[in-house]
Image 1 (cartoon, rainbow, N blue to C red):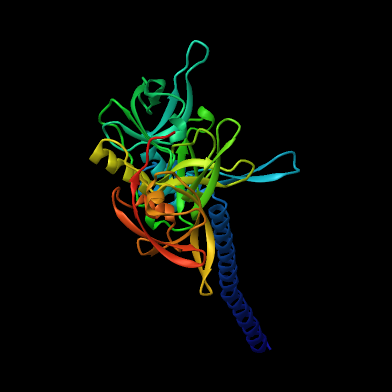
Image 2: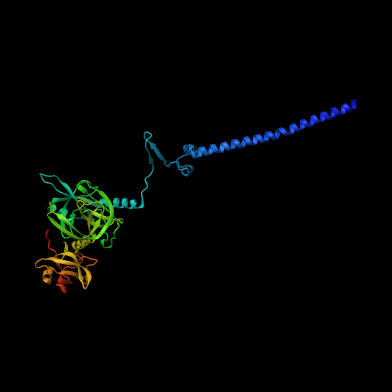
Length: 414
């Protein structure tokens, strides 16, 4: 009995020991799993917190505050770059304001550079007052030689003699008196001379190679007091013929051929100022705009100015080729072929054309073996040499007539 009970007691103790051992083995496993789960949870929270702080800009701001502005970390994080700012009114409207450096396009950069380099050479032409009036700015001009030769329009300096005008040059305190004026009424060109040296001159371009659509810049003094005004646009047309009213009530009309049309704004006071290409070269002299119309302005091709300067250098004055007719452009038909011609409406007495036998009603269709399709009669005459014998072909009573004209010199008649 006692032996049996003892065995049973031993079995019971053994089972209890096994249970204790099993319990001791199971506790570390659950703790380990719990610890791992807790660590993972904390890690995820940390990652989320870092993401929130980074994308919220807090880490960047803390770092930028801690480092110097010229450090590599500051440069990498773009600490000095301004951010777009959104502003609100009374909760009703929103608008964005972007701070920081203004970006200038390539075209804008070109225009800014041209204006900066050219403006010192653009001058104001003034008319001296008397006891009843004050001095006033009446037009614009631009310096073409360092020793004081200035281009403007003939109509700007047509009201008086040399001593009536003065020139104001940018960054120079005192105005300069005009000493000499050379005028070309046919092209509305004037060259005025002032006594000075080392003046900033503008380079002259080539107006024979212009293209419609080119960017151009006009600088001048619109209305006489808005000095240094800049406008820009494009060449809108070439070889235009325009009629401009002259005198106070526009009672006289002057016609100009082969001029440049531009949509750059030209206003009274801009006359005589330069029309400049993107290379900084003058390609025209602004001289007219159409009243009552928008974006219709005109400039004299600069090649005509270069001819006048060459004549001034060679002869000491202008020598303008002259044929002695007035005409209108017309389309004529010869053997069912349409040709551009010049219908003669007037022949000046004793002029080269009169001496050659040109008659009113003749239609000139050829000049020195050149047709008038691409180049006007006016331009062809301007390129001729004084004293040169030129063959012209006219249509008279349906027949072709060949005439020889000796080109003369335009007399100075204002």
